[in-house]
Image (cartoon, helix red, strand yellow):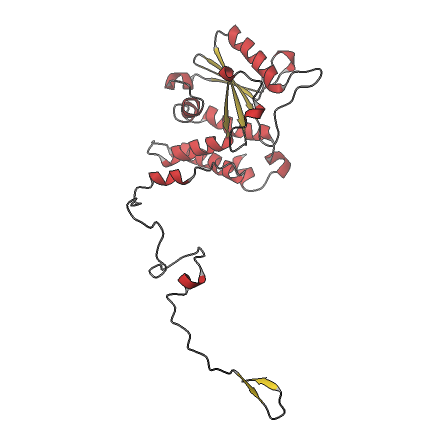
Length: 255
């Protein structure tokens, strides 16, 4: 499925479906090296404390039907935790109606009930495509029971693992790279700001200038202004005062 999406072989409507995105991302966490990817997601992004063994034994239940016909996107039972995941891409959480509680309220109530029945601690993980946390989406939810994250943070997590010194085999690296590229293709890259430059070791922070000098640059693509970019070109000679002449009939012609 990754390659079909990356190469434009699926209808655009399917590519925009959040169920497809949820399946792609969390199927990866299910089938990849869990001690690396799933554990990193749960511990770094959700702030849990999952062990390698617990990650290996985690149970994934996609689109379970809970009571009151509530259907979250995914439940992960891992260690002491019952994690209910509700993921959004191009849509918002279902709002309250006259006859039904809001989507998050229903999932919170039903998730807590299921967790208590299994003697597990409960957490609702809400995933959106928002670039920043929007509290108005969660103002009726108890802060103790939910965690917000976004797809962009998952993309950054994958990138950091791929670029790290973690020993990934060829298949793990290829699988993770394809998923990362898929998230980028969906414009789900996280803006990390200039703070990410601190990890680049070759930059001398004592230098007064970060950018190159036009006079010494062999190749450049950014616009740096006419005066500076033309400063290395030999000046054009001064033109004569008149570049036109008049013929005997008084008309103007190019000289």
